[in-house]
Image 1 (tube, rainbow over the protein chains, first blue to last red):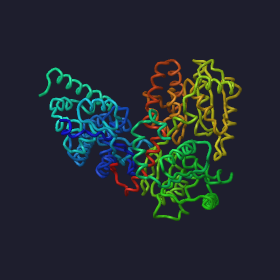
Image 2 (spheres, rainbow over the protein chains, first blue to last red):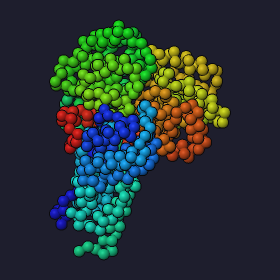
Image 3 (cartoon, one colour):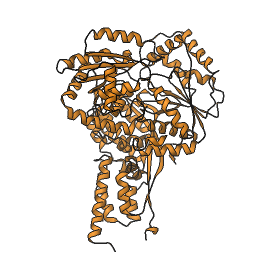
Image 4 (tube, chains in turn yellow, brown):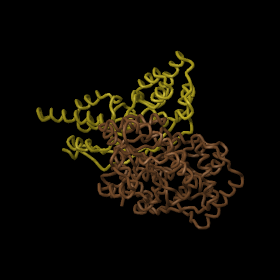
Length: 223
Length: 406
């Protein structure tokens, strides 16, 4: 039976930061550069925030800078509310970020510039993806692997996959659904708010949900 | 040899290093800097070169030779790139260039990848022969966020001929028309400076320097250099001492490419006066075990720099689970997450306040120290830096693709 199941192969992404050479010192220049920088740069600043170990006050780099360096807290809160995983393409995410900034500028047209040295530096990444050498074919083995894999692997499968696959679904859920037919588990995982946890928090939640699913199986075995 | 890091460094870094070395197997990687002793660059190269060799990379490390006049000039360049006004005459620039030209006679530059460290050997790019078949990268370890414009303009003239410039911190990048990559430096957890020490080893070093362990110890380890602000650290100690009796240790090595060190050391000694609780130690090169022991014996470790390349002494102390206080300059804010694994400060008063907090709240100090070690494990170990150099090299060989599947 297990032979027929497509195994789940854990992979890992490691990113090296690369400069775009562009920096913003005000909301106006931030907005201007957001409209022009590469998709890779928008992706990095909007979606790779969770690779940082210490989640700070906001949910992406633009919001963090608006709040902490520009001290425009309302803008920071609004930018934090932009969900990059709700959009199918980076172009849509970019448009939404610009819309939020434009709305803000229409209400508060003359924000200050930051001090020299506090500018926003637009970066991109060189990403290396490689298998970590763990392939699993059932939920028990998956659970064991999930407990020990690197946070970067969870980021790759849980966050980055949503954009890579363009379907708003993470790799774990896709495998649970397509290969293990665990629809209840997939529904439960969908309830995890990806913005409210660091990666270890995500790990804990998924472990808990898998354990619950397995317990349910033990009580009433699947046929 | 790399297997010695299993269980110490993150497994992902070791896995990626192995995969990249399979791809780059047999290729040659040359590093060039200007000193074999003193400073973070040479410490890392001492360890990195044998590790790379062991992984079937033909790695070499060459050091350019220069006289006192050359190093006086390059020290001015270093200071100027860090924003300190320095006069560098046309004759000095010429001398810098000519000393580099003289060095090409005794260094074999034939390598698949060449990494030139810092401004001292930056003109070497002018003399490379095999332009097409080798990747030349310039690695800048210093804070060039606000350089003297004329000095940066001259260095930039050389840098533009490299394929890639590597900086430690995003703030140091300079909007160049070549690829600019950020790679933070690192510490070696197995080196004499960072390996675990026994209590006896620590006590032996403390006895050797006649340092009683009878009261809390504040420590700063750094070169005697005005940007490290040892005078400020003494002021911090004097404020703290009003509330908690303590000792201050200022320990520093000298480096052969730093002629200003002695003048600064004398200034610090004079400012310290005859306070028996201030201990100023000038350590000879390779005093790694001594520095390790001092860091482990300390209660609070400061790095109150006012300009900093990266400030790896912060990571060294964090690796030993020490509570750290650092000036918010250079690479220190990348290592210290304020309030999570240490404190960032902007003044003598701020540093004194945070020191008092640590001395009066040992639970907090312990908690932050543990978080510090974990943070260093994930971000600032030598294995991560080797991984990054190999990644960039491989990415450049793949024509600069931004996503690479191995």
